[in-house]
Image (cartoon, rainbow, N blue to C red):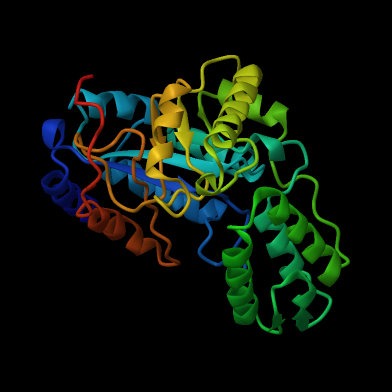
Length: 330
């Protein structure tokens, strides 16, 4: 009964055709159980529940098809897509079987440099703080100050503060600081199976999932000159095409916030490199007026499963304000 009401509201907010809105959900990880440090990250149970709700309330499409139908003004009412960023191993081990159980497809945007045992800078920071030897850490020699991390709340606050400062360092400096931070505050070795292997990536593609580009080393593109940005995006695309044996036509900007993480002048780079669309992390829904190379994404982050559908419907009110460079049907 409640899903019927949600569909009715969704039909009003996203009627399909020329008036359609496209909701693109973004995930990163699906864990086997709740992580006390990050309790809103999806687990196998919550992801299963969310997909069950999603397919009952929305019409779920592969992103490539949805982009084509957005251009031709032929989206169904309540259209939605599922995407994952970065390339975590649990996407294959945990998320894929759940997607298959529900008969749904997703698009996985892969940062290629971290496949086969690599570690992104943010995971190094999280690992270090999570497994710190002490309840007080001094990172002054890294220019990051001192922190108390005796409680889970303090650890969350410190991780957020460090990531905000380290994220926008130059790419090489960022990697070095994250590596040094690990050696300073923990003795626990980093896991070597956090990210997918190339074999898992192939399996994901062979299972009918879409694979998208996400650069090689997940840089903040806004901090790169044009040649470096092109090299990062092209390197990731070429690598993925070599692995899956098919064109990679969808792209996700690392971090994905306009002007903070990528610049307006860089939006043309994915198009020039042969991509057909690109997604950001700006909240909202896409419409036929949206820039196909800056499509918004949104996922409700709530520990209450009953909030999932209402939050997605609320997001339908956030109509995209970035004008499309390509006219519908072009």
